[in-house]
Every structure is written in C-alpha cells, then in structure tokens.
Length: 152
Figure (cartoon, rainbow, N blue to C red):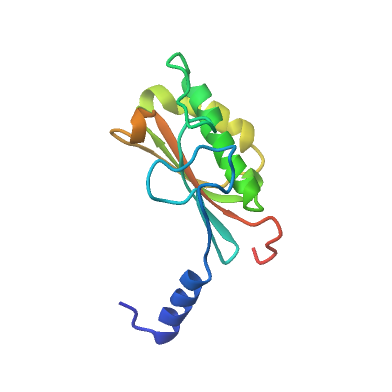
C-alpha cells in the first residue's frame, strides 16, 4: 500500500503508459511458452521475459548441444527481441541468468557471455535453479534501455 499519494499516482502512470510487445513482435525469437509477453516497454525501459535456448521455430536445440550452444541461442533470442524494441545488447542494464548446474555450466556460459559483454558489462545475477521450463538448462532475462533514451 502506498503511503505517499504522489508515489501511487506515479506508479499508476507508469503502469498505464506501458506499451506491450506481444509474442508476434519478432518472429526470429521463439514465442512465449505461456501467458506472457516477450517484452514489455515502460518509460524507456524494456523488460525482456526469460529467454530459453529454443529456436525461432520454437524447437529445442539438438540433444548433443553444449552449454555454449545453449548460451548462444538464448543470447541471440534476447538480442532479437531487443532489436525489435529499439534497443540492443549494448543497452542492457541488468541481466539475470538461471543455470540448472552451476558447477558444470558456469565457466562455459561465461565464455559465451564474455563475447557479448566484454566492454559493456551490465549488472548481473547468476543463480542455480532446480529446473527450468521445458527441461532447458539455462534461461536469461534482461532489462535494457531504448537506443534513443538520453535520460540515463
């Protein structure tokens, strides 16, 4: 509950001005696996839902795929969504990474992640989880700013 009326009004204004990007925003990333958007844009920020290593055709990678293959696919999915939303990987301000086996995946994941984020290093969390939707080994969600946002 808001104690400050101005804060409550500001919050409502932010929510009311949010522009939704539905699952058809970009056909080069897989559609959402449930009832959610690929991304939501609000006040110059783009909130990208967790992206898993599925192809744009909504197919899993081959069983022989490595952690690096999975990371590449998930990052490419994030990139495609951001490009469609007037942003890019270089505009990410926060990344949340979910791995199903931290010991086995962390090093390989970071090799791929480092290719995309060596100069621009967004804030990041990386956590181990018991399992992820559709049995995938990793998931990436991000918050980014628009390319033309000069406020930040």
